[in-house]
Image (cartoon, rainbow, N blue to C red; front, side, top):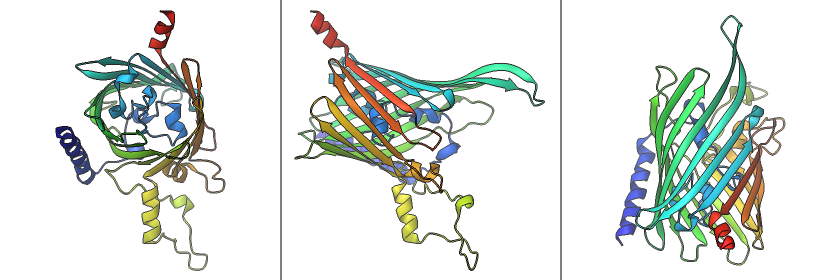
Length: 351
């Protein structure tokens, strides 16, 4: 009973942030790479986070309340051929300690590549590299058969030519799992922290966000759907682009959305939906849709599949492979590859 009270208090505290914080999004934050997905599975199902409690070590860097003892000695690796020649990767490893709980350590890096340097007079100053790195220590503990808590402690470092910044952030999360594990729900407050050293004299906010989500596996069909709600701390996510505003052909006045249209558009910008179809025990097909990404990144004359994502998961022997593609823009879609395994399986085979 006391554990449920703790969970209730945690949810209440997080909901207070919803009315007490006026956070900024988009390009107003620094170290946005902290929000890059750490799993091809996450990308395939919308590209944000997941509430699925099935001991997948690659999804707990965004939802630490899913860290479990079953992840002991699990290893997860992700690689992404990012935009403009950059590359992105994550490595995760899990350990369980009976008295302390379960831990997952991970390192995330984003390499933007090599650049040619020039001064204000267009004189060459030599080549330089830019990159960002984050070290994450995640902890999770099962409170009882239904509720679990978790937290991430993150140290980040960012270097752009001679401009450098570092700092610390914390994620706090709580999850509920039904007794048959068919239904999962999570509430997450992520990136609570600050820069310790700024690029210059101006301090910039890091991308704080409150999220909640659910997932449900259907009873008579091998399918699980996921519904996520992002940015509980900020309602208005709309961006009015004057370049694509519509005008009345007779009066020339700019046409504005009705209150109902504005509400519906704002609400959908918080929503990410995804699904996973299981074909036996060794293959799963995944797809997702991110409405906000589509509205912000599409080209009006050719929206194409911007905002949509897809992928698959394959189990081969002791390895689980995941692959996905996400259409961010017409210029291209990165390839996400994730590999996970339980290192203990190799020891047992050897013995």
